[in-house]
Image 1 (tube, rainbow, N blue to C red):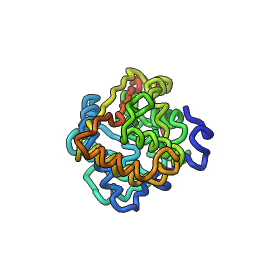
Image 2 (image 1 turned 90 degrees about the vertical axis):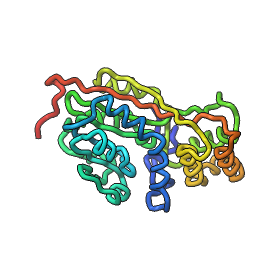
Image 3 (image 1 turned 180 degrees about the vertical axis):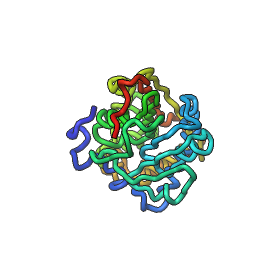
Length: 284
């Protein structure tokens, strides 16, 4: 688990949307939507296979532009979705029947989406990797799951480590992870521990899977990474690992037939809260 020292200091943790990826920056919703295009089908398939459907009350944490929430409502037919984000401008700009937007920070001890144990599904995608103390947040999110309900967490798993071939793409990806760690505390080194972390909270039937969208010229995931590098350019260059020219070269590489690389994968882990009475949330 990352420490304050390892992630560059307490003042650098949990600042997604401030140092980089600011929601007020033009086009940020389009960048988020590119990621949604790459991952939403996989996410919805997993959630529906886990049973998300009519009658389910759902919590979507770090909802972004609300694509998962809207799919749960329109295609899975769930009863309602509470979509939580630190900035809800993209959610309120795209209202949808059954979707309620809540502006909140889940790291705040006062975060309270309602009575513990009210949600059959609690979901968060690409959220915990940007926040301090993911183990504590997993415990918090587990407490919000109803008896018999499921917690589903997705985060990035790096496939561009030092064992990967050196290409313009891998050089910039490695610098990007370091730059995001230095500026906002992003840490994906713990994500392989996620199944065990869910299990230690008392969840059962824990399992995980990985999805890696193909990097193809003009594909949503390739455009997502190119846009992400541009928006995080200052943080990437500040690492000293690459310069502006290397980022420009990597962007051209992504959009060329010469590109032969793996995108970071999305590891999705889920676990069920036992339905026995001992797990029922306290009244009040």
